[in-house]
Image 1 (cartoon, rainbow, N blue to C red):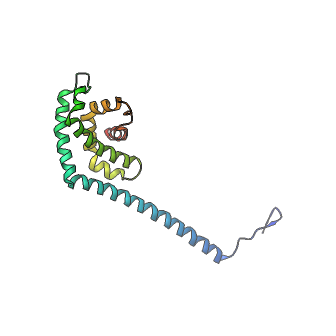
Image 2 (cartoon, rainbow, N blue to C red):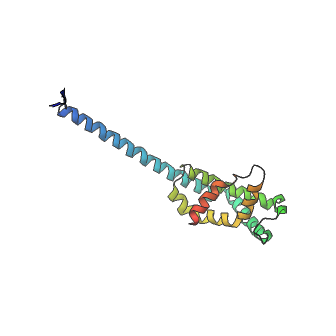
Image 3 (cartoon, helix red, strand yellow):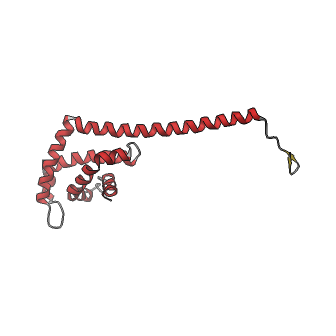
Length: 163
């Protein structure tokens, strides 16, 4: 067969079989890698949440956080801002410590380390509630010098999950 005076050779059947096998192997490899990534993300999220539920220090941090949030709610001004004096309290740091856990999970989620479905199913209520309860503190921290990016990933995830 000639096209524009050039001889075109299509090869023979064994060459085409080899090409098809190579393409099949490529597709199999791509699917396998994709599946392994999904499993790894689910395992990473599950391991993270298992630690939050089983680690004594994390459970103690949650207890301190819960108590501190109650005190924060009592000192929020009518305009929805946190009183500056609260920043000098142990409760302020208890909330910050626990929000850092939420921020870490949010960073992992936004960077594709954690699986979105697993995180949402297990943690969405907790994270959104924490965001709503501590919003005056988050805003206070973000207004501080070099604090504009504090809890920015947590905020992104909370707003996404609120919808």
